[in-house]
Length: 123
Image (tube, rainbow, N blue to C red; front, side, top):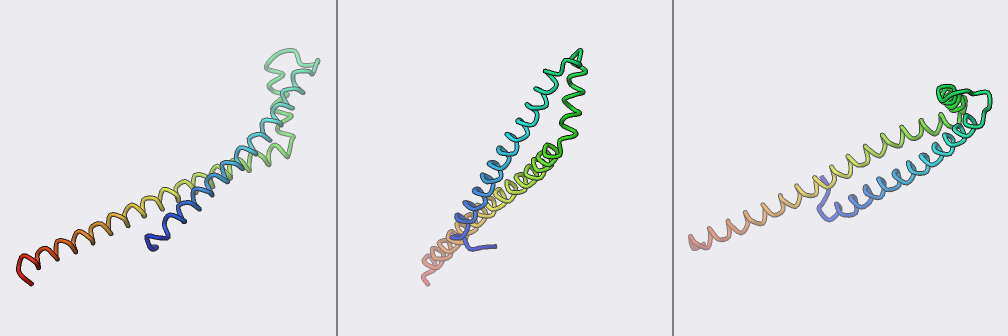
């Protein structure tokens, strides 16, 4: 366990990591949205496609063949897992800090109780 005065900076760093991952996730999501928009446009303006089912199949095919899209989806999955782990770490630090504060309060209360007991006995 770390010293109590180190928890605030560790918590701040952990929160910053969550924010960084969230920012990376948003960037990847924008990239995915662009790829999907391009696939939608390709399917929408293909005159050979006669109905929605054919357009959806074409959209799927375009995305499936786009290796950059596949990389972006993989990256999104990886970043989502990293963010979940970072949030868990942040909560762990917050909980450890709460426990450390409670333990410090308990130690102070015990010291005060011991002091008052000695004072009553006349020591």
